[in-house]
Image 1 (tube, rainbow, N blue to C red):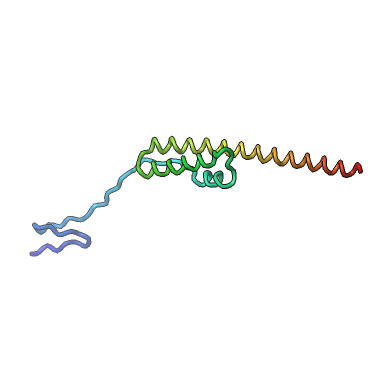
Image 2 (cartoon, rainbow, N blue to C red):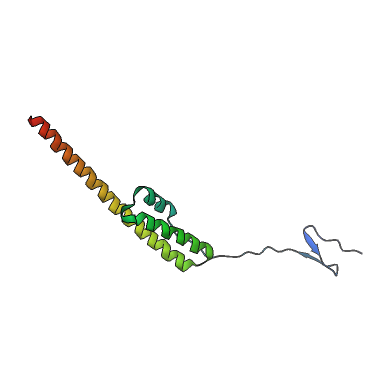
Length: 117
């Protein structure tokens, strides 16, 4: 009597049939925040003192380190990118508010001087 391989089985030389068993690997969570979108926004729209560029550079380094498997270095670059992004947004927002206040004050002084004459 000849042994036929079962569906999905692999015939071996001694007529035994082995079926493939699934292998389940559990990987730990490799969540590394690189904030690439936030860094790109700061690079283009809110870049005081080149902080947005530094944040973008560290975001790219974090992503590269994550792909290479160096998670501690990736977390370090990601944390630096986040800090630089926050600093860039705060400094940029304060700068924009100061510019708006200066423009409003100068406009109000200009209109008051026209009303006197």
